Length: 308
Length: 308
Image (cartoon, rainbow over all chains, first blue to last red; front, side, top):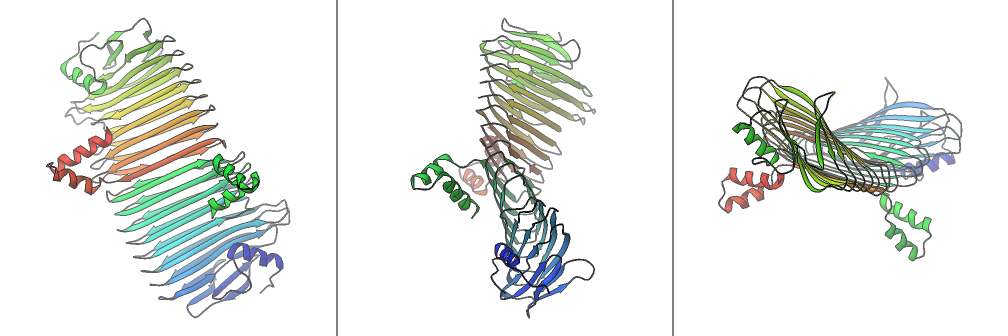
């Protein structure tokens, strides 16, 4: 186990709201090694033996526990591919806090690719939070490509909140959720890009079971010369309800594309999509400025509210 | 010039609301020949010499005139590719009525592919109506693949209404509109598919000029085993406003996909998209039945209203 430095603790606070050692199951991955691990009676974390990554087994009926699995990288030039598998037993009601922080002071790219797969038992609920953040003054890039796959059995549900805060030069997000009978997925994605950053987010929600429901909310801000592309896809294969909402604020010379798909393969599927791209409303800026804020403060205030 | 038969007249009424010989410029294409042509002082129709199709020149300043250019096919197995080019002079305000009707009593497919290109001068306005319809008891298919390209100069505008009524087995629609400064395009697409029909509609609206505006309304009904795919694409390359709205009613075993794209390449572009796919609302059906309509009549009434 490696000692945590100040920079590590700053990253952990940014991406997982961790101050000191948290209560619950924990696995801190640092520079491809394990900086800290703690299982609990109900949440067992074990290393994979065939490839990088961990298995997390959560006992059926576990309620009110949290599992933290943040990843931090402070070594410039590090490039890793990690597989984490989650087995969430029937009737669980748990929180999982993931996230990745890269502090790059060097001139080589640092990159984390993570594949998280969730097998969620009957009537289990979980909340999944994932924050991505980059820092450091190096010329090397910070790259994060998360892949998230969730299989929800009958009556299972997930509330997923993903946030890319700042400093991530390139990201390609792939999310796939398969909803069984009466399963429900609520996904909120928040993304801010600046400088010359690039972000792509592909999402596929399959409403396979009768009574499946899903709601996707995507909120993004593109600043400077950054480029964003969204491909959310909601597929109704059964009597089901799906709603996709993409809102984007465009600033500077940014470019934003939203290409959402709603596909109904069943007469009883009801699918709705909305998307809007535009700049910050001028009257909102003026109103805040009349309240005493500078133009910049007013802009920040609106962006914070939008991404909150 | 070929004589028009009863079946021809029925097709012409269905696709162009033509009863007898209309007032204005006319070109009736029948089974790849010319069944009728009439130019006016302001609207000149001439045959192309290098390929199938016509050139339509509308003098600058022409106001209040209508040009009819329907296409009918009654020969089973006919397969044609037609190029029609429209030059609409500055300051015009005209109506163009196109449309294609195929009556197929045979066992071979009949197919019309038409490429319509519009060069629209400064501040010219035009309305473009296009209806597609198939009939006949033959086993041969009716296939229509229209391609429509519109270049709108400064201040020009188009109001385009396209309707696929019934009986078209396969269609691939490609529409591209390039909006210059202060140009405006309003496009309404209505589509009904039934049986084993397939329909694909690709649309690209480029908001290239400052002050360009566009609104796309797509309304579709998919019945039986039919399949529909929509790819509307609204691109804001300048200070502009674009709105895409796709509403679809799904019935029987139909499959409907809507994959709309909004792409902002300029901070001053404001783009909005909405899409909804669902079945007919049950309470609407019940209300109409309490007013004395049968279940089938109630359904028809709702579909007619939806596609009106």
